[in-house]
Length: 325
Image (cartoon, rainbow, N blue to C red; front, top):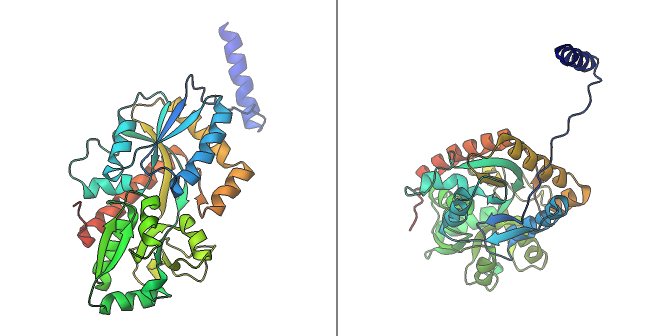
């Protein structure tokens, strides 16, 4: 018996050395009931437009329904807490956006530890946040917006998709650095923000670029700048915030996390399945059309990205003086 094992081990070692070792395929996730992905954003917004098609593809792969449950509010704390409190069996996952990495610096009363109580699985991609303006504001470029917001006697009302979002902190940092007269109007997501932005009751906003594209094409909004570290491939003539104010730009995290204490094999299986779906040409192309840079990063790389973004937002919150009101 021992001789047989030694022979097999020796044979496999020899095959590996010759580059002929048999491929090892990770066992896929096999849910026994519907899988829930908890989203911190409103239903019907830009986040849903990205997440729900992905959920449908995962349902096909797993043979179980994959349901998106929208739990907005609390700067994503409500949704994140639901994931933290779930059993670590893969049947409850969460959508991680930038507020996940902002909250440790902005909120002192988090009911969980972001690094200890969650398991990063994969960063699906990076979304682009953009500064847009209503035509009634009378500006057509970022430079014109800065000049107007510096000189206008009354402050310009600008919207974000919620307290503690990347747009909120970036807007506050821009206001402070450039000496702008702005007043922040937070919303619980893009759907409610657009209800005030499109009629011009709020004249500027930081929104997810994909959600703004139809309004840009219709002339209902003007694109002023993107918050990416680089110019957006769809709108190469639009400047990045970093070109005028280095350090304002950031990568818009969009990824999947689970509760703490998930088995390593389960995490790897979930990552492998999600990455496989993201590599499907139709899915990849659809996400790119929605202004997303598709990453499908490993759990280790996503963990590193979360740690890096926590440090970025710690500095941004401190400099901007942003607060939860």
